[in-house]
Structures are given as structure tokens and as C-alpha cells.
Image (cartoon, rainbow, N blue to C red; front, top):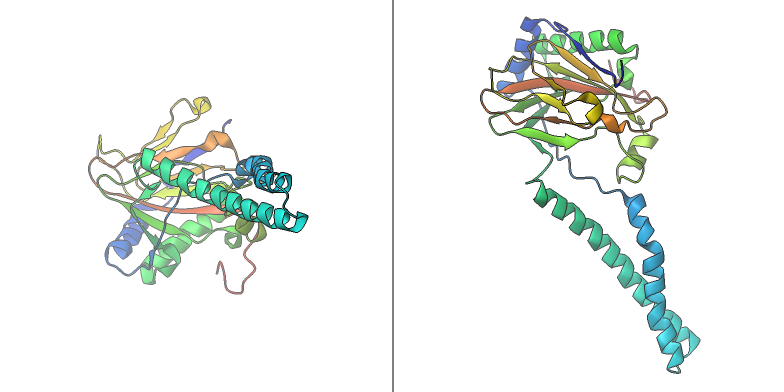
Length: 267
């Protein structure tokens, strides 16, 4: 179907979901610092480059007209260019801060733990989820990003965002040189939410007609942040709606273009 968003019911056994939640709540999982900031497309900011260059020429031209030597005018022009470049960098920071202020803060609010830090029965439960995801996606877990266990309390949320990286995003180079683009996202809901409790995964593109997926214990949501060629699918903008009551737990990962090459990863 198009756009491709799928829900696999009863993907993970309820007992396994509970084991992962217990590991998170008991403090045995390693907490992950996670700060998903607003992304600024630097390629679009480069459109300012001609303006910055022309603006930096004015002091040099004016200096020449007033009788300065060519070398003095060149130095003045370079100083103006450096100042203009600094301004462009500050402008990017200002834009990010302004957008974050307008949306009321960071994109994500909650707590995340490393799924691969689980031990004992919880580790077996995470491993079972990974084995099933390998079967569903047809990819080795060596192409999976490390799993994350996330807990959302009342008021926590994940604001509207895209999980694929766009060209020009500051992190795009790091992604493309490593595991590559995120092609598939897999979200396993580890518990039910009470009626009216919020926490739905909502898709915002008109083609998905306001689709909301209500968390149900053991279900797995699968969708595709980018096309096979790595180009982001802009229809996949989504959010984790605010928690109004109860607590929401998920286990998630992304399937990437490339497999992890380091020894021992994905075992």
C-alpha cells in the first residue's frame, strides 16, 4: 500500500514486553543521552553565500576609491568576509533557537535506554525482537541501529519530525559515511495505553489522512523514512503524541543502507 505504513499485531509476546519494561524500570539498562535537535538545512543557507560575498566587497571597493593600496583593500575585504561568515553561522544558531522556542522546546521529551545493555531474560527478549525484525525486513541485524527502549511519562512526547537525514543536515555526512540512510523504522509497543491516555504515533502528511496508531502491547509499527535510493520520504513525518495518562514504553530501531563493519556488532 502507499504510503507504506504497516502494523504487525502480536509481534512480540506479552511476557517478553514485560521483561524489557522491568529491566528499564529497575535501572539495569544503560541510559542514553538523546537530544534530537531541530535540523537546519545548511545547503539552503548556502544560498546566502553570494549575498555575503558581495557584501564583503563593498568595504574593499570603497577603500580603493579613497586611495588605499590594493593590498590594504584586499585585507579589508577579507576581514569583512570573515565577519560576514561569522554572521551566517550565528544566523543558523539563531534560527535553530527560534524554531525550538516556537515549538516549545526540544523535539523529544522522555527517557531512553540502550536495548543492547539488557542482561538475562530481558536480553533474550530483545534478541527475540531482533530475530523477528530480521525476518520481517529481510535484513541482517548488522544493518540495524542499536535498539532503544523509551519511556514516556505524563506530558512527555516526540514532536513532529522525520527520521531520515536530508542532504544539507549537519549529520548527513556522518550518516552517509557510516551505516547510511535510515530506510526502515520499527517500533515495538511494549504496553497498552489507557483509553484517552494519548501516546499515539501520528502521521501528518495529507496522504495518510491523520493516521494515528494507538500503542498496544506487543504490536510492531513498520514504516519507511526513506526510499531505497536514500532520498527521504517526506510523507513519513510523524510524532509521538503527548501522554495524558499512564506510561508508554517502546522498543525501536532503524534499518540502514549499510551493515555495521566493526567486530562483534549485531551479535
